[in-house]
Length: 526
Image (cartoon, rainbow, N blue to C red):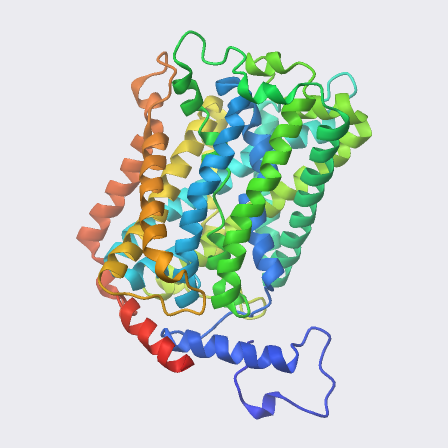
């Protein structure tokens, strides 16, 4: 449990246990919990997630390694090597969003992240609808990340010198994906300390796998000239290349997603008002750098890049690695990929379970009494953790019968996530125009308004891109528009429930008080 300030808790003549905080950390936690009480809550978690662990959680959730290996073939086959430029475009836009989030979380370091930010910047009804949509988006993220792991895990266990790249069969994909979800759930149920350790291990694997192998491929195994990044290699066929390039947008949009999870565990992080904004910004910036290294390394080391552009190899990375590093090197890399996938799924499970917990704690979620509980020994919301994995299991079974739906499900996931992001950005802009000056210790100062407007414009453009139909006109209408249709179904069902059941009226939690809280925090520091 966090320190309470009672002198009986601090025995001078008793040696502290190995994991006990130092005196300075104790007082820091007292300040954290005082900030939390100022916001109307008592902490029910343990603050065992350090700055490095918090950054690791966001980084492995964003996971440049997982994103690149998952989307690489799609991006290259859609737009050729120039697809890499989406990494720069999306990273720039998401950095604006991360900066806005940083100011908000610095004032409101609460479990539940986006839901709490929307509630305090606007009101409970606004936050409820946003969180409803976001829960579906992030829950489906568990599904897609686990599904994307199946080909790489199959290549790890069954790849050979003759066939290093294995595309998992439907039964293998089903079995592997359900196993990944289950293992990650069990590890998450072990507690915050386990989540922090797995996140840090995942971070090490990410950095080692990308920086070491990516740089090795760039320096020693380059088979293509750097000019290839300006060569479409016939991607897009006879249609204008702009549409092909637009079709590859998922390369960046899918990648820079997850930095907000740093804020979901704010009540488990020491000094969150300062640490979490830094974690989110570092996640985006460092994620961009390592993603570019990884993506460019695979492109330049590909012995038959034209075949990948033509769509003849749907899982080319194991073959690229095998050609450059041999079977042992390939297996070691795939092992780090497996670790990153596990850490990424765990991060998504943790983030959405804290959101559901925070939602339920305010009496706003169906079954609030059940989902607002935390385990007595491990201090994690076990019931919420179990519940948020039900939909991923059902979707995995759906993909078993409709295997071509995976990327379109991923597009819906991103559209829902981006919409929730922009609801927070819009709420922050609205509150700024009403006179809000963020009161947390981490602030953008006078540039906050300009950055906020830029983040909103970027987000609207990104949502338009995500909502566009598939370029494959042979697909049925509902299949081409599945991302937008799925989003509208979730949004409309949530809105109807909100208007009929009025869950926001069941809660007395604070709302719309950003200006008042900012003034009180500044006065307290003075």
